[in-house]
Image (cartoon, rainbow, N blue to C red; front, side):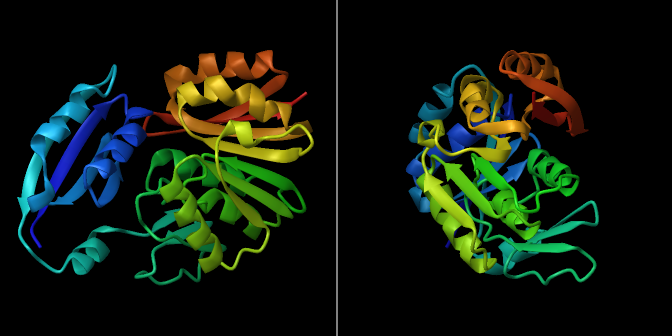
Length: 277
């Protein structure tokens, strides 16, 4: 089958990249590959409706979008996908791989992720940094919440590192189903995947570690709800925003009783660590 490859460069990438992926999925795009400045979308060329695509892009909101369309001749798509989708090694610590890759005997943790439409294959800088932050956390016997869990890669790593209970929450049904698949494929027993958002959090359930790799606007809106279910002395790890967003993120966190500890930076994206006072 002949496919159209739609390459989008988006500024700012988040949250518009996630929004556009969802909307382009609604008009027939079958798969997506994230890039540092946007993503590539693939759709059978016979299904491509440029009017519908232009309508989506024109109404995307306050962002700048550049895109081009390349028609790719019929070929063995499984072979093409496998040749372009690389596994990721984070800090010689965690190997994130697809079913068509092998495991890495030199990595402490090997996580099998079905590379579908869900966010979280460790190719993006934010997921990479969150894995790196989790490497430095003592998670043994802790309760963990993963908000905006995507593929559930971070939730899976938390269980592998000794968490006794993990909740993985995402409001996208595709991501939720992909998370269930990945949880099963990695033989995880202590992760509960939930289709929902911050409204799924209840005051009677507290966590010792909360992970949220989403985007600036959602973090600023929902951070108080995360902190409300974080135990005293607990840790909050946040990513999905740029270095220039740190002051706003920090102000919101500190106004809700959090202490700023440190941050990591990769390709202009950042991940921050806070503790509850």
